[in-house]
Length: 132
Image (cartoon, rainbow, N blue to C red; front, side):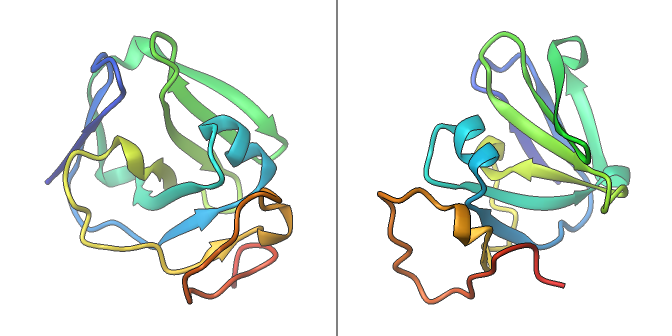
């Protein structure tokens, strides 16, 4: 079991079961949401994800036609996204995890939108969109 929370601890969750692929997203929306050069995210099956507390603190924002972002209304921590092309999984912000998920980001996506002041220096594959 994996556990995680937002910054203020008002939202707490558990993940029972394996997680999916992890990646770094450089799209402008993820950069602005996280206030960073990129977002580290991991796919988590919705059936394995359980809010332990704070459901009333979870706020939704539809950032595009296919994406809903969820964050804590108290501390502003980005928590997870839902994405229409992948309705069975959440895109969980890895920074909210308290435990090691056992996976590491495998690639960089939307690198055409990356921050001009950031240089990718690892050897992971880089894609203009999500790899198929």
